[in-house]
Image 1 (cartoon, rainbow, N blue to C red):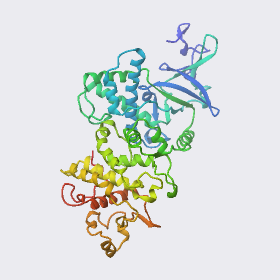
Image 2 (cartoon, helix red, strand yellow):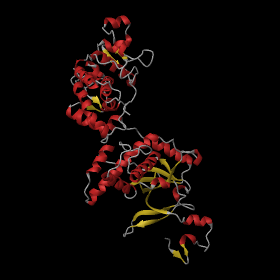
Image 3 (cartoon, rainbow, N blue to C red):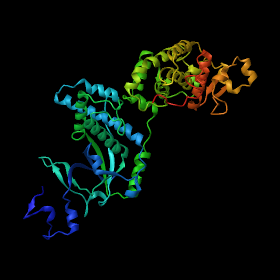
Length: 499
């Protein structure tokens, strides 16, 4: 409500008793929403720092990536990236609901932890501030046509914050954060569907691993409280720039997204406490097996300490668990049942002669990550591939038992198969290997080079490790994955069949 001046509310009353439309716009709109903000000056330019309820942000903002809606100042939306963020937000909202129970002294049902475990638990949740711009105001938001507001003071007269009034015309155009905005909308859609239908979505906002299942009463309690968090005390932090034109928005988008330095992969994995594969590496490989892990790779093999680079370990285990090159989308529900088989592989790997020793790369090719990826690929195919053979467990046992006996020396002629003539292959005892390998007419067959007594495999791991896996299968007498049978005669090396 507005205070009255005479018989009319203040916004309808000007200095001349009758307001013009311009004066009316300057005074305010009848549908204004108040927000408490802090006023800052980012490199001299006035900005608002404000908190917006999680559920409300999409309603008061827009993204300039649609030509029909005006000038473009944003890139196209990546739906998959937004979906990953949405899952993260749902986890954060469940964590927020759990935290509220802790603060208020209420008992915490086990379902909170069970759902967080299925979604992927981690020690802390937070979203970086979004950056927006209000276009249709003067630069800095002051002067005619600006944003109405007043100072909020403490009893001692100090400025606490400012209360500003944003109307429907004050759209927050997203400069940095359109994927967070879309993800927040997806998270709310998911919570709405779960609460209204009593089932986990099987299409649309699929953010939960168990699609189409009925929601239990205990789970519904959690989702209701997560929804309450989204519409009340869980907020998004927004930095609002004032009066930028489209060219300035584009420059700001560039500066925010291109001037930052990307975090080194190994450091990122070291700090990440959310992914179950990195948990497995730290707990089982570094902890139980005592593998030495480092953040940086020694370029000179003579300086190799035998430690494995963390980012390489992540890629190797992503292959073993998921048949993928990265750990994106890994959840405890998928990873934990597979840990025993992958651990069996690593327990044998550490028994390979000279593995993990000083200057290991000079002593064994098994110290090269691409060879370990080959072992990981076989582990995946024999345990988790939907088209694994009927006797896969028996074959996997033979594979595990044979790992320490494989000739992983640099001098093994098998690694140089593609550099040899037919006569050299025959003289080296490699007859029959060709039937295990993919057709020579397709794909990259440059595995690397043998120089100075060392076999150095190439950098194109995705091309190389499936072939090394075929060579290892042949050397152990395991079934040929290219032979007719359960696997057919297709090269499955690049496919993720665990859909």
